[in-house]
Amino acid sequence: MAREAKQIPKRRVVWSLNAVAFSWSVGLGAAVPVIPLLAMQLQDHIALAGLVITMGGAGRLTVSYATGFMLDRFGRRRVALVGVTIRMIFSFAEGLSPTYLALVGSRFMSGVGTAIWGTGLATITADISTRADRGSITGSRQGFMHLGMVIGPIVGAAAWAATGDIRVPFMINGVSKAICLLIFLFMMVETRSLSDDDDAQVPATPAKSAAESTVPKQGLLTTWRAVFASGFILVLVGLFAAGLFRAAVGDTMIPVYVRNELGLPQSALGFVLSTIGVGGLGASFIGGRMADRFGVGSVMIPGALITAAGMGLLIAGPGALGLIILGAVLGAGVTLVHVGTNAFAIDISPRGRRGRFFGQTQAAMHSAALVGPIAVGAIADWAGFGPAFGAIAVFFVIMVPIGVMMARHKVTKTNAGAGVS
Image (cartoon, rainbow, N blue to C red):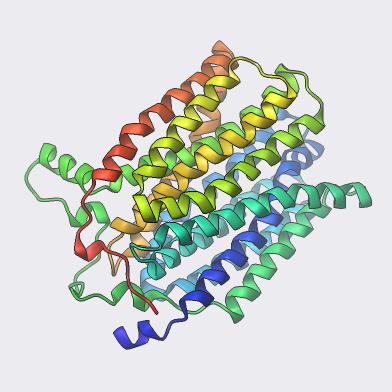
């Protein structure tokens, strides 16, 4: 196993991850803003348009746990190829949907493909990372993702304007997934051997989750203390926070707030959403290097505070320029939280069963996409946007002690990053 691991070209794998992150996000950025608009053309009802959005999260959550087992059993590259193929097929199918129900079904299956693909990428990133570079590798992948999310909406809007066809952005999304498929077919190599390349070999017993592998059988209270001490729950909370911001704030609350509450034009909304990506782009590269040099607490704690402060300032109802500035601030803050959590997850991911570990932790982010928009939207309907933004701010304040616990967590040798050449 060690000889095989040393032959894996690390730089090639890293740049393959960056390339697919960029291509994937360009297509996603082109298609996501028009999904509810197409849904309303097929079925003129706002609630039903929202259901189309949540169906993607339902599909992701459905297969997240099973994906982890498949990654450990059949290999990262092979399973990821299945995921991107499913996503590519149903990206085209979304744009070709003749009826509302066809669009709902395509969105669900797109979510299935996304979960398989995303969990595969997270596991590959952990395989090739060491304690010295896991933040940089994670940050660069996140940076290229944000770059794609900045460019994607521009490309999608321009294509729609040029053709007058709302379905064209979906075709762009499908082509972007085809590019990801080609990159994985011809550039990516299998990295599963790196997970097993360890001085302390993993016993040939049925694999357990990271939480289960550190939990003694000594009663319920002791068990939950051990689960928390393992760091597994810290990862779940961090990924839930990142998913909550993206689904509840970026995709749901800010568009409604800008257009309906503040009455600002569509161009202002476009600038706000773009600056969230710009802020995330800068924070990804900087945060990754900070995590490697100073530890995950150096990005988790300021990221949580920045996001909480930004959400608090939204309550004041800033104008168009203020919203654009706040977009960059919020994008930077939540990206620092995401990068720090991913780096910490790599630190504690157990060799030999990393697929299962990331299948379980990614489920936390997928669950946020399901419950976040509904919960935060309910607060906004009941009490207004201020309390809704305030609730998000309080949640990210709670992330500060989570970051402190991550910084103080002791990572065992068996959970250290795998070395590659």
